[in-house]
Length: 375
Image (cartoon, rainbow, N blue to C red; front, side, top):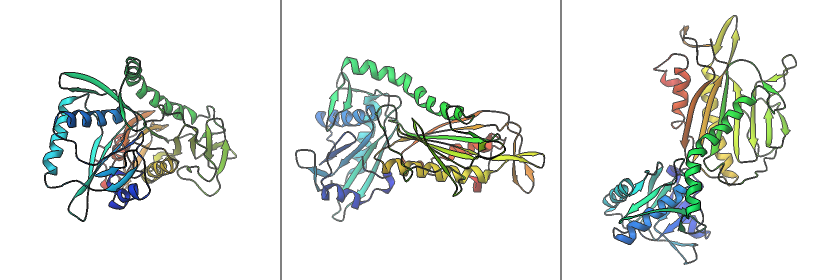
């Protein structure tokens, strides 16, 4: 996979594939031409897309010639004159010949100076895999190997179907553990009592690949609302970075947990009791969420971990708390506690992608139409 959000890939990134001799692999495939409309072209295209979705996702780069050994050799581009019609054709093929439909399939077109174009087809790792190719009276399941696709064996199919039921819950279990940890469970300290946001950011492949990331003090992702006076504690599962421990409560305001498995947990307080009123402050949540989720993805990518990414968010300790929404208007008190806002799957965790979380934050306090400035 090209190490960039899809909408930020430029011609220079494509040129670099050939310039530096990038090789095909588990998440990257080169094609010199657009998939043909004939039997073989359709079959191979469907196999390529479903194999990536059934494995760890990746990019199909169309318009790059490889040297026969999988190494990018030249950017040649493809004829862009009938591209819209060709793209409609492959979209129809994915809709009618893949079951269930691949949930994440996006295309970026990069125009070349000679009027030709390069396409990057990005396929996300799927939580509902395995995906079946039903074409020409056959039904086949594919996975991605090191440089090519292969048909899944009966054993692999059994495992894939079992994982399709189990994997979402196992990923959610990572977040449930993060929520339990704020009370000090298997942690060197606990989070202060009161309204707390708990966020988990992980690659969808977190439970598919065996990783052991060495999160050093220099590489650690710092917690939201942090100050310069942070503590770092090494543990079996990774590196915990937390704000100073309060001498009276023996608790902290925020922390991050940099897991060796290649994912991140964050917990931070978003409100407090003020002169007898229980208040939550949007400024403690919305900008912190946007900043930390995006940075988490950037840091994990720098360590060689690829998306797509899943973010999960829970609020704890918010019951009976309110938001001052402006001009002394106070929202209804929250009554759902703990409040799980669900999960978001995206390939970059942009502010727009996180909008369901920011909207859910306001709904938690009874506001169905939150201020646009607070989203």
